[in-house]
Length: 337
Image 1 (cartoon, rainbow, N blue to C red):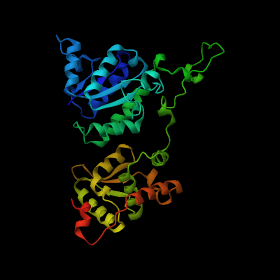
Image 2: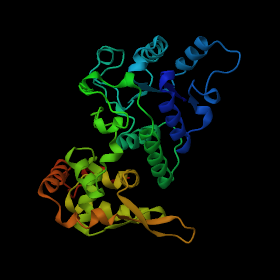
Image 3: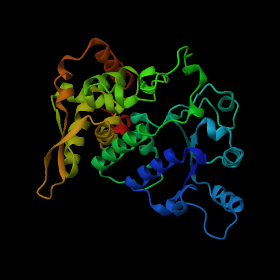
Image 4: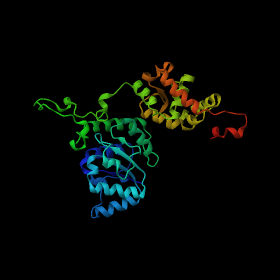
């Protein structure tokens, strides 16, 4: 499988940063089709239309980099139509100023009800990387992934948006002429909250609470938080000690009659929390490999006194994952690995 980035050439600045991110997390050069860069594009001497058609029929993972410019391009719409007919696995990524209410998007080949995300949404970028890991060999170095994503978001924030991409509803009437020394940014022309996300960063605990309240943490992540609170294990074993922690969790799940989602998904849960920047390495082996992770202090210092609405969300998930353990072995197959 390859990754085909369907995009408008007018958005190649975003596309180039996306390619850079993919390469940094381990995607091979030969696995990327990106026609705005000859290193990832059409082989010399081949007809562009026939070559693109042959690539799409091989069912690559298609990334639609959507913008107003994309929907103004006949070539882009042809690519979208061809890939959509073949039912490729795909993801829709929106440039920062793309208007989701535009009639072109609402009436296009892609189902607007499908979940896409803005290119500068950190949490969704991390989820996207996890999705890619199902089909591609992504680096196992969580720190490298985190650094690559942060660099990607910083680079994206430095790209000047095209005036064509700004929804007219976000441009207020300017009754007075702009003074020579007046900065455009100071007029707050762009009010879309996704555009300058990096300038609205909150502290880590606020981010932690916000993700819980918005339902963006999975059940197994919340179960881990509950496990940490109940057992006081703010440091978690990983690496060669991982199996020991899983055994502890498995016993805890049985005692508390909780489904074994956490023990089964422990490794991926740790990875997700690390990518969200909620954990850090607290101990390493003699070879400098992580053997223990801990919840960052900005979060851990609040875990024993969480706000009531956060506690309610966690308890709700625990109740939904209740499993009555019995003395009959055949009734407890879910704990058999």
